[in-house]
Structure formats: structure tokens, C-alpha cells
Image (cartoon, rainbow, N blue to C red; front, side, top):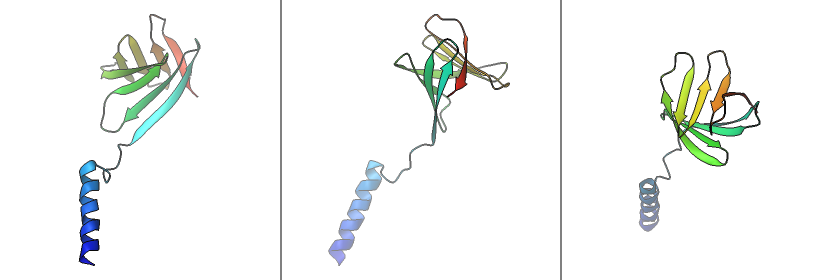
Length: 103
């Protein structure tokens, strides 16, 4: 019986050390479709101010920037805006700003 308890406790220590008892961060992923045909996926993680974008088949990390209205994220030639009015726009790859909708 003592051997069984030692094995269970040992397994618990190993699991805790490898992070198996730590819950994953809450996350949110949304897919958007834009007027110009662009589609992208954006992900947000709890306690992380960045936006993680998959656009044109490439991953891009966007840092949160100062915005006069709503929220703005940018990085590597991509700018994503969430307006207070509920609108969403993206500018990337030298294209003009385009409006987008949640799919």
C-alpha cells in the first residue's frame, strides 16, 4: 500500500513539474472576411496585449498601439483596427485599408 502511494505521489510531482496541472491560458480566435476578399484569423490570449494574426498564409504578431478610437494593433506591415462603432479594418501587403466582418 505504501508503495502505491509513493508511485501516485511521484507521478503527481512529475506531472506538476511538466506543467500538466497548469490550465492553458484562456484564448479567443475569430475568423474575418473582408470586402477585398482578404480572410484572416486573429487570436487573443488572456493577459497578453498582442494580437496573433494568420493572414495570407503567414503568422504575424501585432503589438497593441495607441488609438484615438477603439483598438489598433500593428506589426510587419499589417495594421488591424477595431473601431468603437463595431467596425473592423485591416491594411496589409501594401493594399488599401479594407473593412471586414466576422464570419
